[in-house]
Image (cartoon, rainbow, N blue to C red):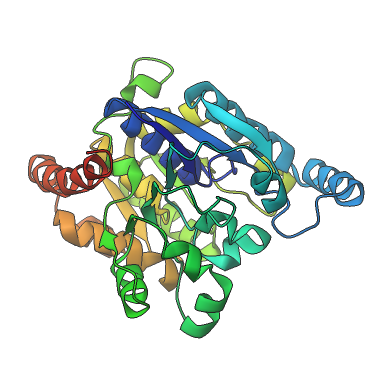
Length: 354
């Protein structure tokens, strides 16, 4: 039994990020080890952590309705990932903590190696705050975001710290290729949310199907709204709309559901429309008919890659005619493919603790 300290993006009001952290935590637990979340806040990644910015940020969050969303994410994290270390806001705070050199340290998933996301905390997500005598450093399904300027990316990441990792696994093939070009071996694995076979134990009540379209949008574009409206007209199904990612307007943010209710909405929907990778993942895990609408081309690659592997690439659509013509999903075949995909990634995690 090992103590495994996980550093990931775990309590941002992005429900995919919160649930990937939960999934990795739960998988480590299921493997017989003791997971701990390193409780690093992302709120000050753009700003200094001082009285002025704490006050201004607090006011901004309240005005935009963000406080409600952050509270829901933090409540879920504390409830379902109870082993948490510290209350960190800066790399300096992480450096001053007495980390146990014999513990295991695991960088988790999501865009933890995308400096555009992590900003001032980017080197912390390379474990730069650990002393050199900490040897058990690993990464699972880290993502580097959309790599454009590799030299800039190399200069922003702590490549020396990454070279000290015993094993690295990333979420996309191009991440493997980037690291290998820079002399660091890496493996491609699946997103942590796919490591768990079921999330039904998180649902607040017994599932009863609702005869409606569930609309889960990241971008909430006019084109996507028009697509959902037309599909509703063609099918005769009403639309239920929920968010799981911060929106520009306070009204939308105040409508955020608790994460368990967000999952219940997916589990109970008759059909789902989304442009979100993680909403797609949970549609698959709950065995639901779904369509991925192409709201922004940059968002489609990761989803298309997963759907190609599972043999259901026709679920990506850009018109109602595409949606109506798409064949039904054979979930027996999908689950067989997913089982193989999952096993190889679980074996990677097991090899860390062998």
